[in-house]
Image 1 (tube, one colour):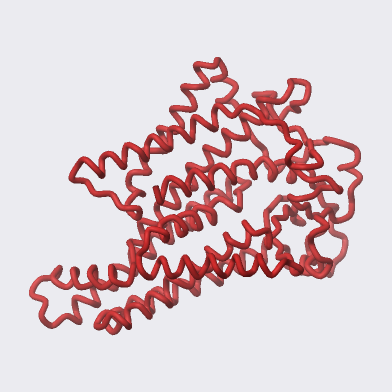
Image 2 (cartoon, rainbow, N blue to C red):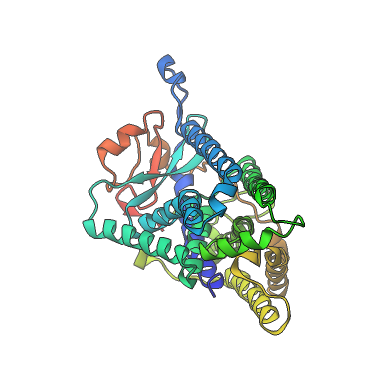
Length: 410
């Protein structure tokens, strides 16, 4: 349940947010050609984000490989091993959990931006004037999660897995190029962890004077890491990677259900293959949104839950023992089942061709209204501070996901 519950919860929340992302991206006007020569040398928002990610990735590589070569020093005593755990695992995991807590408490505002090159991207802005209670909520959640990780408590399974999935799904990927880049980053992260574990085991074997066989020192590593509350983080990252792919299927089904529930006259064309698109409609409050049937989204979640139920039965009544960090290998079978269940439902409902030809162009800016075309100023939520907006110097077209022109988004 520590895997199933956070997965279904995050899938449901972020799938609904994907409709909001879609509408906000379509509402942003295209930027005008840049005539200022001084702005040409300015880093755009997307370039700054890319540079920041590369620096963080390089720092992580340096820390992990340094830790791997110094593993024998730490593995001689459990206290030093816990210090190693605190430096290499607790800090990044805590950062991910804090990010999730800040998003849930409303301290982080999601903003859609269109860069100078015309491509949309998603970013976040921090709200400065926030309640102290929200800060306490964020810190308290992070402390509980770290304590749960330290003592290997089941609460860690729920919180950490939810935070990892939330981190993989909160920034929706809008182009095929970025999608391939995401897959490459996740594959590189898994290969990096395998390399670190291999180096660590080799160093331990060399440092063990009493080891008569190459594998004799491995139980020592397993015993002490279990005391420190560690798990196989390679499998955890792999589970997160496959869960994010499953989320793409579920969120696409959610958006298809939304557009399929609209009247035909409110469906602008997205491609030549289908007449299904998204209407830009912003009710004044979230409660004003009419409920719409979600058969395909529900079918995807039911198939996901059924797959994990089968895995749980196999783990309980067979010799195959499956832990939360080993779900990744079994998640490979879930993705085809989700797609097949959705396609079978479409065939039964007579909408197979409509679903199969469904397309989304996240970079397009349809002419929805004259007001959107005339917009030349920055569109942004009133909840953002003016000082925060000054930080985004090179971006001239922003749109908040909370309010658009004084009205809240779906």
